[in-house]
View (tube, rainbow over the protein chains, first blue to last red):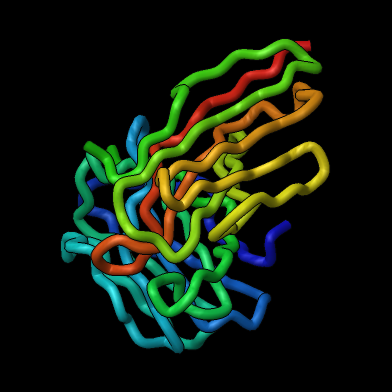
Length: 117
Length: 109
């Protein structure tokens, strides 16, 4: 148990559906992240939020829309996805953003296994 | 070529063996991370280091900044150590974490 929860754990959706992934951290951290993990590929950073402000959008298609209403919650809204978007989506948090200013351990949630039909 | 390379990609060991997983990187970094991912997806941070060596139980991580290389060692390996081990570095052009592809370890009883 890392203190970061994600729901749902598994999601199957059609290409025309709209769904949302939820992440919640109980660690009092200031930074939250969305990652995508596809088979045979390294983890890919999608979005970074620092104190509820989006500081990074790593060239992610607009069919993925993040929302951070407060520093404990992070959502990823999904619409008109493609089959190639099927992957494990991981949320993480850290006390401060990981980067040049310093290195902070990131705590990961269990992930949402997404399948797009 | 990835900025973070791990070797081997797959590793099978017998219980009790000493295991080494290697990580090389090509960018300037502020720290290097070793992560463990079990089947099912959850990722746990094992180590964060910027110099020298760290030890936690049967796990040892070392880093050589000059050579841009890190190793993760597991002593007296056990089947419960079976997982994917991921190397990541804080740094690069944007300062975010950059991940290797992972090393899949399987320890047989």
